[in-house]
Structures are given as structure tokens and as C-alpha cells.
Amino acid sequence: MTKTTPLIEELKHRLQQKDNSPLYLRFANTVKQAIQSGLLRQGDFLPSEREFTLSLGISRITVRKALESLDTEGIIIRSRGYGTYVSDKFEYVLKEAKGFSQQVVLRGKKPNTFWLNKSVVQSSDDVAAQLQIQPGTDVFMLKRIRYVDDDPVSIEESYVPATLIQDANDIHISLYAYFRSQNINPLRTISRVGAKMPDSEFQAHIKLPESIPVLVIKQIAFDSQNHPIEYSINHCRSDMYIFVSEE
Image 1 (cartoon, rainbow, N blue to C red):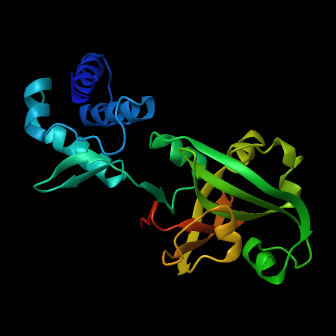
Image 2 (tube, one colour):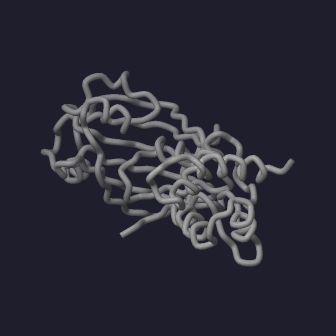
């Protein structure tokens, strides 16, 4: 039995259910759930549009629209002459204020965090400018190693106004999950991306060949009132990340 057979059965079951949502969205969401559950894994190939159409009894237009949606989200890769398969890289959408952990889960992977530091410091001029506060104002400096499926992928340093965090020990894997528990809703982000060679600190935590550059993502997150709530500097493995910026 191939991996696509249980996927077809899942799709048949889901598409036969009474639901007012568009058919292509139910199709796309079922594929996402199959990845999250482990039914599909990175690198697995999907049936062709024609095979989906014949097996499910739906139009090719519906299949194509669903696959285009999954392709746009970076969940699958469609290659002419090669086929359609589950993406083997982690695509992180810079514009969405979903946070690292949520985006990892949505792509069927397991996030984790190893905390290096949670402390209150006085904001530097640069941090204060990004957070729109006075220099020297107390901020939490949160530094951690990020993991995707047990692989270390980045070292992230975040600065958050001290007034927004009651107890830093309540922050576990996801800072954004903590924000939402405090009725703080991250809404949008502004990001700047650069690159540099890995330094000794990065190499101490995340071993990389010296020839592979590190992506440096500087990001400001805003709440629903357009107030800055986090300024982060993220050093990421360029061989495992694909960053997507949407207008």
C-alpha cells in the first residue's frame, strides 16, 4: 500500500462530509492535516491532478486550485516534469504575525525551544527606537535556540517592553502563545533580511560548515493597536529555511 492510498481515503471521507466551505479548501486542509499527523512526510510525492480527479470524482479545476493554494503556502513543491511533493524545507512567512512555533506546527513539524536567557535589561538606543520607547527603559531580553523536528535551526534574541510580561517563567516554547494568554494579539510584522558568516557563538550551538552563511532576520511585531510589542534579531540556518515575504 502506498502512502498516497490512505491520503485518497482521507480526502474521500472529508469531501463527502456536509460542509459549506469551498471544496478546494477542504482538499487543501486535508492535505495539511495528513502532513501534521505524519500520514505524509517531507519529500513524499502526491498523485497527479489527473489521478486525484479520477480517484475523487471532482473537477480538475478544483484539484488545481487546491494544489496551487498549498504551493503558495510553501507546503508542497510543484515541479514540471518531476511531480508534486511535500516540501522538504521549512518556509517561514515573514509578514504573518503567527510566530515561529505556530508556523512550524502548521507545516506538520515539531517546534521546540531551548532558553539561553530571560532577563530584564535597559534598552539600548537601537532597541528603544524599534520599540518606540525611551532609551534605558526596562525590557525583557529573551534569547533562545529554535528547533524544527529536533534540528537546531536558529538563535533568536527578542526584546519586549517589561510591562508586557508578568512572569518570564510562564513563557514556554512560544512567546506569541504567551502574548495571547495575556490578551495581547500580534497582528503584523516588519522584517529586514541580511546575511553573514556564522560567528563563534552560532557555531557553539549550531554546527555548520564555515562556508554556509547565516541569515539575519530583524523583525518588529505590532499588536492590533499598531504598538510595537517585540523586536527580534534571528540568526538562521540558510540551508534549512526559506523565508517568504508577501505584499
